[in-house]
Structure formats: C-alpha cells, structure tokens
Length: 394
Image (cartoon, rainbow, N blue to C red; front, side):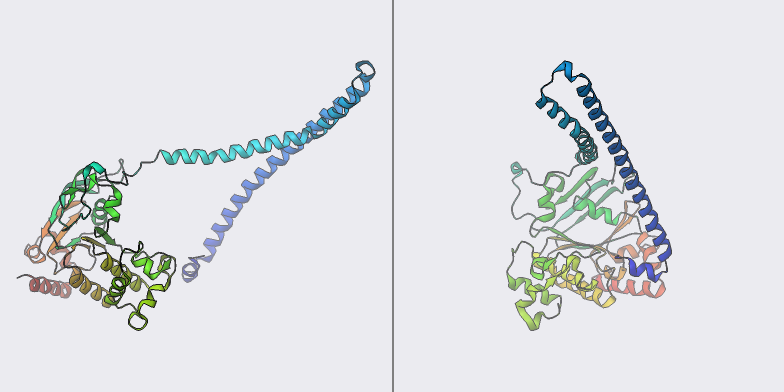
C-alpha cells in the first residue's frame, strides 16, 4: 500500500497484480492441503470410533449371557466407545498443532546461534572517567574490518589521526569504504585488526552503551534522518537531561518554524513515526538541533545533506562551522564544496586510505586521487572548489 503511488506512476499495476494473485494462490493451495489432510484424518477417526463402538456392542449382545457383565460397566464402556473417535481426533489435532508450534522453538534456537554483540556495559575495573571523552581526539591505527567472515575486507589498514576540534572530510567513490568507516567507529561491526582510540581509550575495550549512548560522546547524523514518535521535546532530548531553555535555543538555532512566536509551546508539537509530518529538510535540521543539544565531542555526518536542497545544505554547513567549533567533525561528503574548507580530507579507495591532507595540499598533486575527484566535477565546479580551498589555506 505504501508503494501504490509509485506503482501507478510507472504503470506497473499488472505485474504487481499478477504477483499478488500468484502469492495468494500459493498460500491458498497450502491451506487447502492442510484442511484436506485434517478432513482426511477426521473421517478415518470417525470410522475407527464407529468400528470400535460396533465391535464392542456386538460382543456385549452376543456374549453377555455368558460373561454376566454388570450393566453399569456396559453403559460406561458404550459411552467411552461413543466418544473414542472425538478423543482420538482431539489428540491428533493437538499433536499436529504442537508439531507446527515447535518451529517457533527451532527459530529461537537458531537466533541463539547468531553472533552476539559485545557487552553493553563497560568493565568496572576499567575505571572509565565519567566525563570521557573530553577533547574528541580520534585515532585510527591500521584498522581492518569485514562484515562477515566469508567476505573480503571492507577496510584495509586505515590509519589517520584527528586533533581536538578538527574538521575532516571523507571522500571516495561508491564502495570505497566511507560508510564502513562509520560502522567500525560506532562498533556496528567489530574490527578485525588494529585500534580505534578516542581520547586515549581503545573503543574495543569500552561497553557499547558508552560508545554509542554516552552524553557528550559520539553522535551521528545519517543520510536518512531518524525521528521518534512522540513530542518534539522527546525527539531532541529523549532522556530529558537538558533544560527546556537549551532545547528551545537549539530549535531557534536551526530556524524551526513557529519557535519565536509560540515559545515553549512548540516543544509539545506531535511528531509522527519517523517524522513523517515533517519534510526531509526539516527532519535533517531537527537532527542537527538534537546534536546542538547534546554537544558531542565527535560528530559524524554520513552524507547528511544528500537529500536536501542547496539552501538547506548551505545553512547546515554554516551551523557546523559556528556551533561545533569544539567538536571533532567527520563528514562523509557527496558535495565536495562542503568539505573544501575543512582542515583535513581523507580519500578512500577499495578500503584503503590512499590520501590524507588539507584540500589544497591534495590538489597540488595533479595525478592524485582527490584531484581526480575534483576534476570529475567539471571545469567550472573544479575551479570554484580550488578557489574555496585556497581561501581556507593561511
């Protein structure tokens, strides 16, 4: 139903109707076979019950003058013979149901065999500072990562270091490992070799709750902005750790509609599941406001402006430059103009870190990877990108 508009727009109603009818027929045939098997069994149970009752009645009639069976026992036996078929049918019905339900146990067992995430809590013996991280100094040291044991490495000996407050752009062609780098940073996938160190602490030694959910720690603004159903206040500060005034200031910073006229009343505005009552650009700005509220030491933008217009993109970039001066910023960029004035650019290719340096220093190499990416944008855009990089350089 969600895709009905797209299906009609491309005139693909007939293929989907045919596919739907095929699935309905497949489901109906399975249900028909199941019902037929039940009827087949019930009929034979009734025949068996009638046979038992007939045989017992015949024995009683023909031999009771010699056996002298008490009339009460005869009545009880006849009653049992009458309900024998129903009891037998009930037994087999419950047996087949139990066999069907046992598949749930098989699925639970299969789930227990799946690889488990690391511990959610940090080892108390580690004595992790409650204010960690304080500066946001981030270091990748020969990091190798693969998504599954049977797949090739997605990151291959990636090494770089970011100082406090440094802005770093991560670029590369599709499949170069940009998103894999983010996955390894937040331990969505555990690294196979190397270290990721944040403020002198190896992230592999820290519990996942501290890696992903620590206040003023690391935060990500993804390409598809995530909002939760509830009120606007809960979306920006889910655990109510900050004051209403700070949340309101964050909304004012991103020019949220109605915040100047309605004040704190805007915090109670409803938010539908996934933020469907807001546009993509508004959802991205709300995610940015959430980051402003939490003031992370490390902020990752995974192509966060890929789905917004140029004006919103420019506004977000301006906010990043002014509001996050003390935050180490990693931006996975699809528009090179957004990272040309950054302090550092990392170029990835096939999981390798092939180039690192300031944008202008990388452009000084005419045969470099970054130069090739810039030139691929076209001569006019490439000239503008070089101008932006040159203005940034002292």
